[in-house]
Length: 196
Image 1 (cartoon, rainbow, N blue to C red):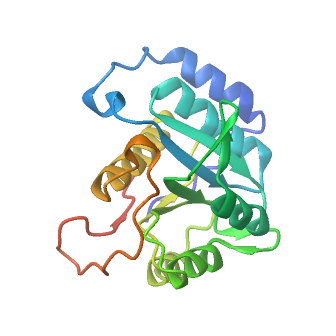
Image 2 (tube, helix red, strand yellow):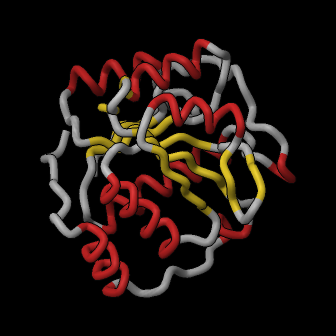
């Protein structure tokens, strides 16, 4: 586990300043595919804005929509999220551990209980080994401790892209695949813990 880094108090300014200090992202082969729609479940508006800002700055491919509550996330997963005036299916969930009306583990358990293989990535201020183990036990695919530096956002967004591509993504608006088989350690696509 790494040390927890608290974002600066003015996170929107921090996101803009950090994005302005970086070189424009190079267009890579990963950005040429179909857009990836990410549902971010984040009760802190500043933290939500940071991931949205970095995703917009770092890649043309990943589009992020944020909700604050577990109930809102479940509604969005059922109905899709609005992107460019139309409703689209979610390709990946990025969630905080603690939510006002539940937690990310409950969200993950509900998805897995419904047979959904939708990738779930934790991006959290809760860096305990017990919570991390519980998230993976519920079926999470990756667990990151929050940080305000670009490297953290690069790592989260890279993992999101890899997970969606690994599971077949959503080409031409098709629904994301469901009911993935459990992974065993050392197998391709093994669940990863952030070492950032």
